[in-house]
Image (tube, rainbow, N blue to C red; front, side, top):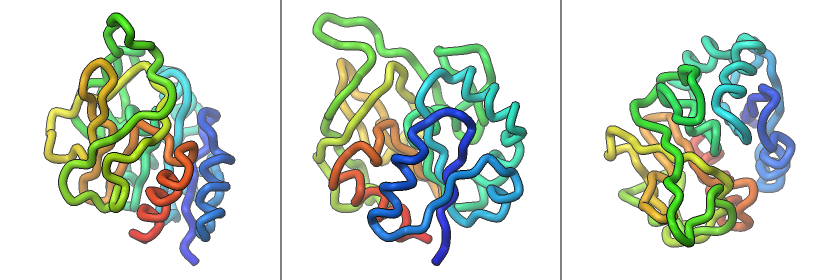
Length: 201
């Protein structure tokens, strides 16, 4: 069985992601080893926390270069902060991101009756023929975030969500998939999404 590599850089719900994959029958392992990431056929980059701290940790573990290389070569899933790290910059900090995709990571504007962070269950609307989100259009998934991605290339957006504004809740382009929401916290819908991802191996 092909293994799914979950990148450990000191941030994220790593064990929850691993357990979710194992529950649906995929072998997954957690590592911060550059060599193991280099050999992986599928990579998951989770993340909870601040953008600059995430980049600092990736640099501390010496994972920036190998991730930039592998994200372009292997099946890849970014989750929450792991989605935002694919871009050049974030309004949350001053560090450069991985610069794989083009877009802006922006903070939700404070509006009446709109809570920041956006936390809890919300419905996504799937756009186009998504491989990752097959069978989950208009379903509820779980979010925890104060920042959102605005993609420059809207053709890669695979779902949108409403929280005061409509924002890009997931993308897919080639071998790269990413979600602002947490599949591992999204019940049966989330398990279906992870199953769809694993099925692409």
